[in-house]
Length: 239
Ligand code: HEM
Image (cartoon, rainbow, N blue to C red; front, top):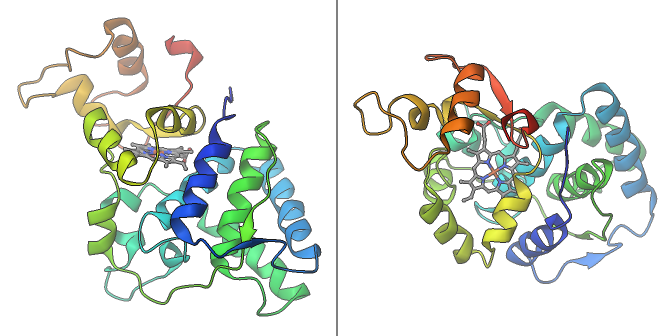
């Protein structure tokens, strides 16, 4: 997987600022907490390297709704939690977070918040994917409210266009450079962009702004009606 996530540091710093100004580096005085997360992240990466970008995205989807409070992890009995909202249906990595949290609970019960686990795991995902290492400010508290409606209001739709996406970014003090940098690793489901290949205006047409060579390559990977295939964001074969 080709990775160019140097600018993720700037991005993650912004997410941290969005979430809480009073967080500190080394909130958990015993450095073991972050060591345990990294140890487990290395094991997770060895088993499934594709979870690294997924865990970065999970942190972002958590932070855009009610701040970085782990509300994206909460389940509801009637399908109304954040994770049930359409922009969150393609999130991956919930089991990995559960696995890290379980490991932490064995060593330091009830100490490390899930919100901090998400933030530390995102940092480790960047680092383990050959991005930079950086300090994560911690001390977040977990929320106990999670709403699909709020997620819909605050998260970008998977098929949003570039102007809409940039507007959303600007609202969070993020830039176009951040947007590109974050999407240099990981995957996208064909369903997230297939309308641009096959039905842009509802008349069976292709988005005219899409490079036609690139579009042809994408069509080979994403056949009409294919709901499960994913393609690499940084798809060298498509360049
Ligand atoms: C306007 C804002 C954004 C839009 C419209 C957007 C859109 C998307 C879409 C459509 C996908 C593909 C999902 C799929 O089909 O599976 C995706 C994946 C991804 N996004 Fe974003 N995104 C945004 C912001 C961000 C931010 C702030 C980050 C990082 C902090 C991020 C990191 C990622 C990563 C790493 C993936 C790959 C996930 C994986 O491999 O499972 N995105 N994004």
